[in-house]
Length: 86
Picture 1 (spheres, rainbow, N blue to C red):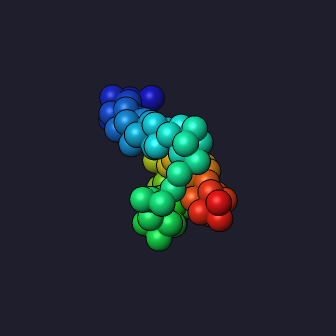
Picture 2: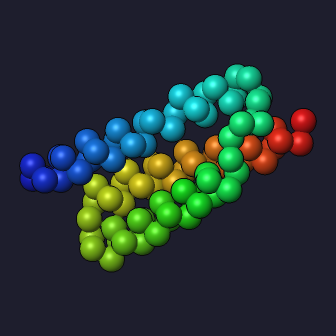
């Protein structure tokens, strides 16, 4: 792993970790009224495309960080759909 990969992992980790506080807040409060399902759906789709891009380029930092982001954003989309009913 070279320095460029380390920078890529660090940048991806920052973006990935930024979703966690929102997930925790929604999980605790069960309130999603102010959160856009459309925005999180588009974001999740975009992250999926980044994963494909990373696979095509064989770029581990892109694949790894976006795969984690994808899972976290799927959790958020699930919470929005699930808690919107309440």
